[in-house]
Amino acid sequence: MDRLLKYITQFGGKAGSLGALVSAMGCAMCFPAIASLGAAVGLGFLSQWEGVFINTLLPFFAWVALALNTLGWLSHRQWHRSALGIIGPVFLLLSLYPWFQYAWSTYVTYSALGFMVVISIWDIFSPANHRCDDESCAI
Image (tube, rainbow, N blue to C red; front, side, top):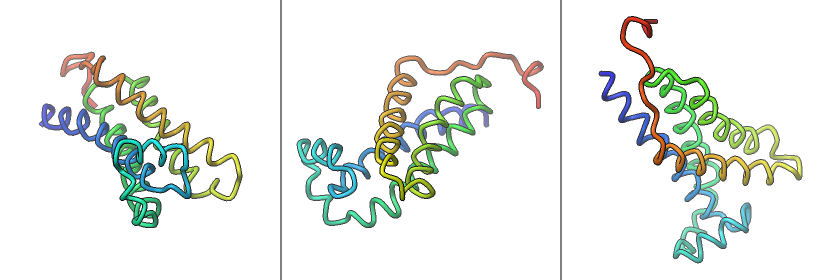
């Protein structure tokens, strides 16, 4: 069970970050800088589904990344890795909902998406290791 949780959190957190980034690339009106990057790599056709991406998929992937990074604590017991993995999705969700009315929320959204991608890349090259044995990690 512990191995399954490790693999789910390891790959799911990266999928959540990638899904949030691709969802942002599909909305040229909301995120012109990221959408231009998406158009450059051939994702310009996604602009016809902007409403679905911003209202449904972007929050969904942010929640997935948040949940799986929170569950990652159960697998590796490293609070700093879990905290860094949680910061991006939390700020992304805050920028989409309560802070959306403010002009600076766009900067928070870009920063949160970038932070999620950076943490995912860091996690690929420096994966979390289980830091304790079963006796000392018992809940």
